Each structure stands twice: as structure tokens, then as C-alpha cells.
Image (tube, rainbow, N blue to C red):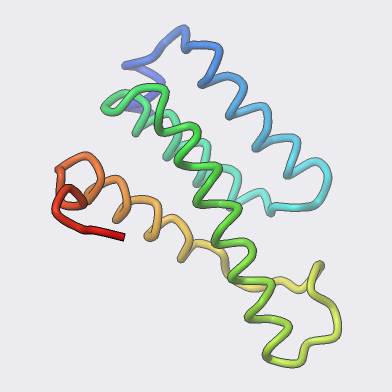
Length: 112
């Protein structure tokens, strides 16, 4: 996070909006404080290297992995899909791996 703050001292509207949305998710109970610190730190740091596109990529990955996590809870027969405290840091690994493959061009030869 420190690297990102130093590199983007004043920030940009996309960076501040992403941070605000994360803090709003924490304030409304959708994310824990540790997750928000992790994701805001990742946002500020990766923004330094990849620019504004990482904001959209980050939120897309957060939504997709949230759906996967909720489906996993439902399949495990948990009654509540929201409010169950399970570690969510694994989602950061998905984000970092996606960035590594996307920005190195590893997806260029993959056909969907």
C-alpha cells in the first residue's frame, strides 16, 4: 500500500472512487475491515503499474468470487448465505493471478 500511496500521491478519480466503494462495502457490512485494507492496498499498488483498468478488473473479480463464495456456502448447506464469516483473502490470489496472465499477454492465445 505504501508503494501505491507514494507512486500515486494525489490519486485519480478512479482510484478514489474504488477506495470509496470499498469503504462503503465495509460500512454496510458486506466486507470485513481486513479485507478492505487488503483490497484498497492492492488497488493503490496495482494502479501504479497497470492504470485505471485495474479498478474495473478488481470489482469484476470481487463480484465473480463473491458469487462463487455464496454458492459454496449454499452447497455446504449453510442456512445463511450472508453474515457467515469465512476467509475471503483467497480472492486476492485470483486477482493477482489474473493480472499476471492478462498483462503479460498469456491470454492472447487462449480462445473462449
